[in-house]
Length: 180
Image (cartoon, rainbow, N blue to C red; front, side, top):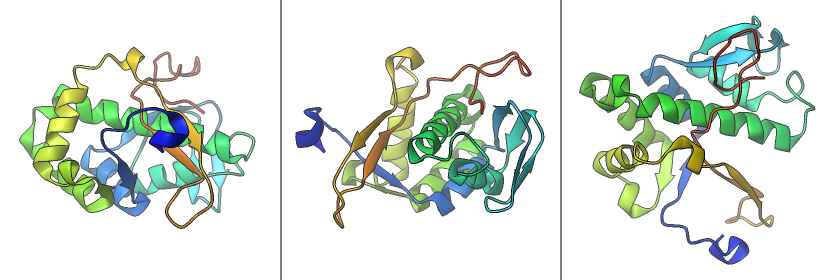
């Protein structure tokens, strides 16, 4: 990936989306703002318009949905995944979670069982240090990037880097956060 992008990569993570559900549940859900209701049998979603706090199962359906959200393209789905992951990271970075061991431990435990990382991040301590360090990065300085790759058994088609940058929510909510 470094050769493809000419950007140094210090660490990497691969998210197992089934463990992702546990991470969302560990922070008591993540709020999104929906411009219109979602009815998607394939994604197992039935959500009203407006502010909705998604639990892990709903969040998984939301980030995987294709037909009922956006234009059905992979890039639109990746944008939604990136926005949701940014909202999840923001919630983990919040004082309510980061400085509350009773809430932080389940998040880190879920993360260690749902992530494949480089050796430096493959422990609760490594992940905690990463999350703690992220608190010092202004959200406007971090962005998601989608980098095309080749189809091989070891190289993904696209790689997403996370960003806690919120997208503007629709007027129905009057706040920032992922909106669709």
